Length: 348
Ligand code: SAM
Image 1 (cartoon, rainbow, N blue to C red):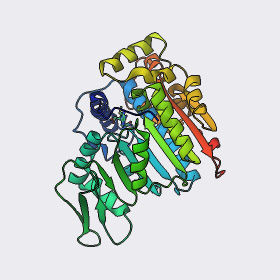
Image 2 (image 1 turned 45 degrees about the vertical axis):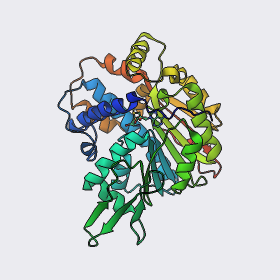
Image 3 (image 1 turned 180 degrees about the vertical axis):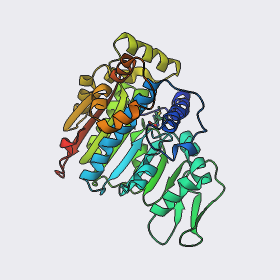
Image 4 (image 1 turned 180 degrees about the horizontal axis):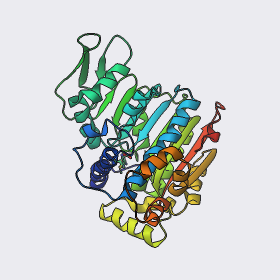
């Protein structure tokens, strides 16, 4: 699966930091609860337009709703793989909701993983949940760069847990029984599979893969290759993808220009032309069922009580601005269901 360049593009990492600042702003304005995001980014002072905050709300709630549906359908006897996870906090939120899967994997470029590991090891509210979820007597966890250095978690008392890291500031991955983070390039599927398997990936277990604003950074061949690899590798799986759509109109063109300014690999936008092309990409990559909704539709299907609550948080002058924004993002999802769990029925 032709993945080549090991080079880390600047843009995604940079985009990720500004994304987090915006998410943090929406969280501090009360759109949704995320007690963990503050540990990855400093407090955002900059005020964002209400439609932006509502857009992030729809994205976070929409993706989470499908993820939760998968976890409930499989009774958490499953794996989650967050592709291009950046500094995402889903693992910690699921733990609070008592919805941890058998194993939660995150993958991103090694440089982003190092940054995330730095935050995890220096902030107990992030490291403690990993240790609490870690089963077994031995709390020796391998942190590999190559395969060498180790990270030692040690209990002081049953309750108070302290964490000792051997000095390895450049660690590129961490493995524990419930949470793993792996530095890898999603365009190099052979290497990706090897690394996941080294960290106990079980391809026979129902697995949900998430990609939020990630596929757009790849070429059409690379993103289809990734989707195909997942469909070929996991007999029972779901793929949840959030990204741009309707890029053909004027607003879409402006979005493309903005992405180009961040030096994204924009060939991924081929699949972002329409909901139909989003679905087609999945179906032609070997998935059994696929669907794609734009975020206007998703927004309309989120729990309306909560929508009423968030719509009171900030006054929105022009509803059209929100609709225009929501119309240009979508959630597409696909399933394969060898175990006949009813995955194709998952929807909003
Ligand atoms: N999914 C996260 C979220 O929604 O908060 C982060 C989104 S950020 C816009 C895109 C992420 O994808 C970045 O963290 C970037 O490093 C990662 N990414 C892009 N291309 C990648 C690749 N080829 N391999 C690994 N990670 C990649």
